[in-house]
Amino acid sequence: MTVIAGLLVLALLGPARPHTYYWRDAAGQTHITNTPPPSDAEVLQAPPPPAVEPGKVGRPEVVRQSTSLGGHRQVTLSPLQKQAWGALDELLAKARSQGDRRTLEAVADSLISDCLWGHGLWAMPAAPVLSVVLMGFLGWWLAIGLRSGLRAPLIAGFLLLGLALGHLLLNVFLYHPQEVRLRQNLELLEQHLGTGEALRPAHQKLLRQRYQALEQAADPLQPPWRFPVEVKALRAAMKQVMVEP
Image (cartoon, rainbow, N blue to C red; front, side):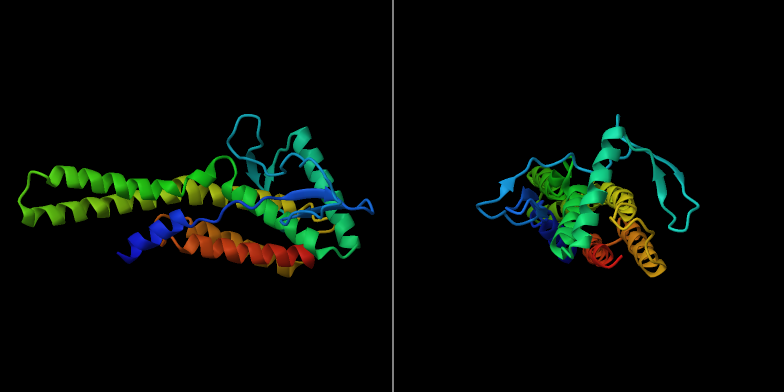
């Protein structure tokens, strides 16, 4: 029952994708925030999202494992994506020179949220709930003609089957795509932090550890609540790297 409750809570209470605001203040500075801009601000149209998507037509694909110090997976970017990442690099360089920590953290939050819930992934937490409900209904329908003593075990068995199927769906169609998108795009972000330099070795090691922990948490044999915990840890690590690369 604890595992069932955990799956239902994760599916029903999954974090909503936060809205990102792009705006320019009276002094002409451009800001990226997760809170609404002031009333006198000029709201800008959001630029093309910098996130890349593996395995899609017209999107970059992982071509090889790098032998560089950071161990980054090399990707091929389209001209539009190169332009978007270059503009992001310039924006972060400007924010960094002005000590604008809020913008640095907002960029990390926005990219992570897009990796987690973009491209229809926001709907995937409903899969385990539907699995449990449908299998429970099937068990109830099959148990209608049975003796009362056999109905409860049959329904419970189908609920457990629905739980196992829901856990598999959650890992295959949500956690695994999220893990791939997070690692690929955050590795790109590491190269466009607006510093023009490589990350310090300690931060490279920290992020490699967080990526590996996230990959392990996406395994179907892991409890369903471990992956959100690892995402939270990765988000905190990325913000730390953004502010003090």
